[in-house]
Length: 429
Image (cartoon, rainbow, N blue to C red):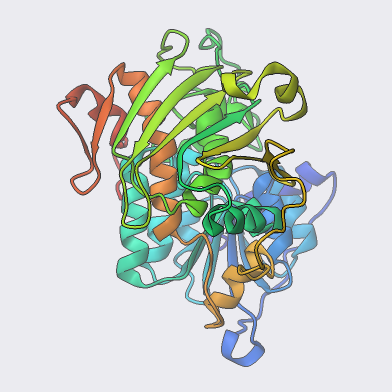
């Protein structure tokens, strides 16, 4: 929605959504130079997007965008001076926006982010950076070329526990680490495509929600939240949690692009729905400071055999580093050195990684020229690509030997359709 051309329509829908009249107050242009606050636009204002909005609300919220009039109306009640849009493309026509926060479903991340970067805005975008590898690469390259400040929304990265785990691994407490296991007790997918389709609610702009993907009729099985169950819009458990849990080995062992990806086990591939469980092996090449590393991913109740069922009952999701001198078990908020008898009385290394001021605050400060972010697209891009390549290998039914520089699977052309984006007419990156 453009506020000048469709104001009456918006007010009618917003009033209906909130059960009463909603007043859109005039906004005043506030430049960061004068107020030391960023002028921020937020695309996607409910769910995870709403939480992001709350985290940046201390800055100047000048524009809000959502395809759902009810969500937009509720956000405007908290930020009545912001301009309202249904279409992010109209929002980006504004000249007073310094930075953009993107909390939409995965399938619209890339078009929102690249458009924001190409018009000179800094970007905070939820994980994974996009739905396909090619979209992620385009976002990463655009951020690098435009020299914009970026942050991928892996909020756990800012926590103290991850910092302590990275310090332990990098201190050599485990010796050399060649093997890591990552498991998540999450289940998405395993569903059949709907056969009947109700009309879209009045407050939902379905064509704008679809954005660049090929049309699918409206259905409550994917809007507003269940879209992660479906390949058209997301990537299931691996795309959702891969960037959170594989973040830890990527950070601690300085991993980047993979060398190969192979699915060890999983259910038959469904044309539309993501797998409820999966086991994937990633091979990372050796680097100057360490040897090659194998990372094995499990979701949907599967877990590494060496963990054992008893310990799995206590660690339903986690990361296990296997080193020459011992093992390190971790999740979001705790970690444990194993065997416990071996590490009794162990003195942790001195803290070397400063505490974060907050994941969103890092980004805001960096946008103002103060410090840097810890999950810029330069880091989050390869991490997102790694997660998405597991899905690509699964859907293609092949082991992917990955040529990261050329962004292609060697000798596996069947994987291309799951690596590269294919947009409907009228949309491009």
